[in-house]
Every structure is written in C-alpha cells, then in structure tokens.
Amino acid sequence: MADKELKASQLSGAERSAILLMSIGETDAAAILKHMGPKEVQKVGAAMAQMGGVSKDVVFEVVNSFVESVEGQASLGGSEDYIKGLLTSALGEDKAGQVIDRILFGHSSKGLESVKWMEPKAVAEMIRSEHPQIVAIVLSYLDPDQSGAILSLLPERTRADTIMRIASLDGIQPAALNELDMILDKQFSGNNAVQSSSVGGMKAAANILNFMDGSVESEIMDEVKEADAELGQEIEDLMFVFDNIADVDDRGIQALLREVSSETLVLALKAADEVIKEKVFNNMSKRASEMLRDDLEARGPVKLSDVEGAQKEVLAVVRRMMESGEIAIGGKGGEEYV
Image (tube, rainbow, N blue to C red; front, side, top):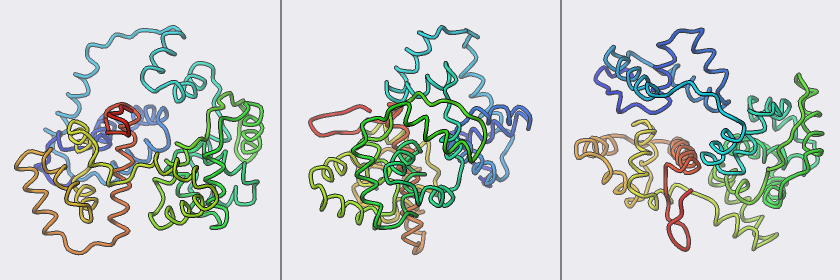
C-alpha cells in the first residue's frame, strides 16, 4: 500500500473498503462497521492498519466507483415476503433462514453471537470441559476458520470425535439451541431467543477441517476414517484444498485475483504446483504475469507456515466467493455452481 503508483483496480475488496471508510470520517465509518460481522470488521480493520500512503487519485477512484455503484438505486422499503425472497435467492435457503430470523424478527443469538468475537484460545478454554455434543454445536455455529482454530486448541483425543459429531448433526431443536444460548449469554449480557436450528452437517465439518493446519487435519481425518470409513470419505469429498483451485473456471480465477493482494498471492504460490501457477499466469495480463514470475523468482526461502497461512487466506476468499456464486468449480458428475 505504500506504493504511490498503485492503481485502485489492484486493490482487494478489503483495501477498497478501508479507503472508503477512512474517507468518510470516524463517526460515519463507525456507524457502518456496526452493521458488519466479526470477520468483516477484522479484515477491513487489518487493511486500515496496514494502509500506507494512498494518492488522492486512488482515493477519488475508489470513492467515485462506490458512488457510481449506488447512484441509480432508489430508497425503497421492502415487504417481508420480498426480503425473504431476495435473501433466499442471494444466500440460499439454509443461510438465508438464519439471516431472515435476525433481520426480520430480531431473533439474534446474543450468547452464541458474542462467542464469534472472542479469540479462539478463550473459546477453547470456555468449552473445553463441556459435553462433546455441546462443543460440536458451538463449533458448528461459528465461522469455519474460527472453529478450525478452536478445534486445534482442544485436546487431541477429542478432535476426531468432535468432527464426527459435527458431521452427524442434522439440525437441532430450537429449544435446545435456545438453552445453550442462554447458558453462554449468562457470561455476557442480554437474553434473546434462538430460532435457527440449521447447524452442523458434513459440509460444516469439511469447512472446519479446511481451515486447520495440514498435519492436524490429516491426523483428525485418519482417526475419523478409522472409526467410520464411509463418513470419513464423505467429509473428505466435500473438502476444498489449495490444489482444487486448478478446477476453478477462468472467470472465477480472474475474480479471485481481484480480491487477493499481491503479497499474499506470491506467498501462496511459492510452494504451489506448476498447474496452479500456470492457471494464475494465464488469467493475468502479460505484464502482470511477468511481474508475478519475477517476484516468485526473486523471493528467497520462506517458512512453510507462512506459505500455508497465505494459502488458507486465499482459500477463505475462494469459499466466500463460491458461496456467493461468484466462482464456479468443476464437481463430480459435471459442472457444479455453488
């Protein structure tokens, strides 16, 4: 960000958001941040903290782009049916159900929601002595990257069992989730009912494992397969690893490159297969691909943990874009859009 020659088109979404928020003043920026989730706040906040000198031209381009994107929108109120339909179309039925509860009916889960803002270590300490099924429900409710970090901090003997319980969850009765929320809420403040029961499942287990260190992930999967080979295989089939980026279509790769910073991309590709590197190079301009090749060659030895961290950062963006439909990936039995 310290580079004065940087163009707005090279900025990630988080960096563009950071510039916009820093341009509108502290009060208005704070009001906007209140409506964002924990991960969004952390990502934009990190971009703000790392922001160096940004030219007036770049600031103008970012702000002007934002203005143009909302210029034609009218201030319309929507009926509940319209909002439900809109959210379901945008997010899918399962995810939309949780959002609809919170937005339309005020059924936010203060106890569980508060956990989303806690450090993984603090959450791990809080749930360490709870019944394994409670641990599974809590981790199913949280974002997969946070759950992965928490699971890594739990005793090794409980990890595989926890993943199997998460994979076997097929929803949970509202009353049970409400009771759990009230228990957690006593440690914080407020007391709201929980109406959403869509937590857990094999996809949730796979997403959590995706965010764990490779060695820990392998150990857990080995134990799961030993206990239940069929379940382990089903979870593994749903996992998305860095090598799967080779299966993302060209349009998706181009969209992904707009969301990932150059530094993260260089680190992530440092130990990547040639197939993935070529996939990335082929979806960049000739000049940009040459610069990336030069950066990769010029970069000396780097820690494997740094490379894995960068790859997980890229994968987090891929999963978000897959969920929103911005990225398509070839699935078993044909092309699948998610």
